[in-house]
Structures are given as C-alpha cells and as structure tokens.
Amino acid sequence: MLAGAINPDQMRRRGGELLVLYGAETFLRRLHPDLLLSVHPWALPSYEHSKGEVEKYLHGLNYEIHCLAVDHEETLVVSMEGIIWSSIRENWSLRSGRKLDE
Image 1 (spheres, helix red, strand yellow):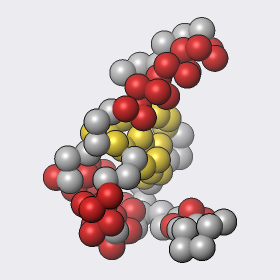
Image 2 (image 1 turned 45 degrees about the vertical axis):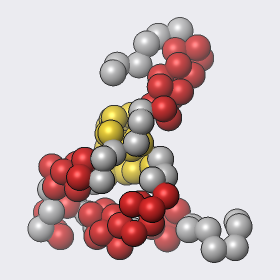
Image 3 (image 1 turned 120 degrees about the vertical axis):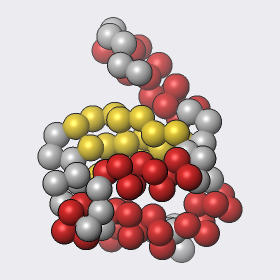
Image 4 (image 1 turned 60 degrees about the vertical axis):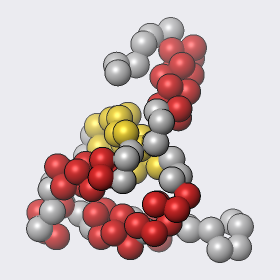
C-alpha cells in the first residue's frame, strides 16, 4: 500500500458511512475522486441516518450515484461526470454479453 493511502479495510463502518463522508468532505470537494461505496441501509438508523441522507449529501457535492449491486449492502458507483459508470457498464456488457441496467 502507498504511504498515506487509505486502507479500505479501515473504512468499514456499517451504518456510519455518512460520518466517513463528512470526515472526508474537504478531500471530496478538493479532488472530486470517483468512489465505490458500500452502503448498509439496514444499519444506517443505528447512527440516525438514512440512505436518502447519504444520497442527498453526495448530490450536494455534485456527485452522480449509480447502484452497481444489492445484497446485504448496496454498492454504489459515485462519480462527478459518470465516466467511471460508463466504463463499468461497457465492460460488463463486453464480458457478460448483457446490458447492465442504467
């Protein structure tokens, strides 16, 4: 791992995703990184948050949100211009022969 890089395993806070985003706000506003974010809707109420609040916060930072997968969590692709989402959809279609829902 690169020096100064964030270890994703240290970022696992089921239900505390919005708190992590609040703590990263300066970073998000300054660098506008694309994100692959796992949200645990069932655990958010334990922090008095909701999935809607997570989405509202990210939209407030001018991010687009696309759901990639849903199981016990929702995996979201979060980007400024949808470029990463377009790439994921294209790669999925090429590999599977099926279109990923938009």
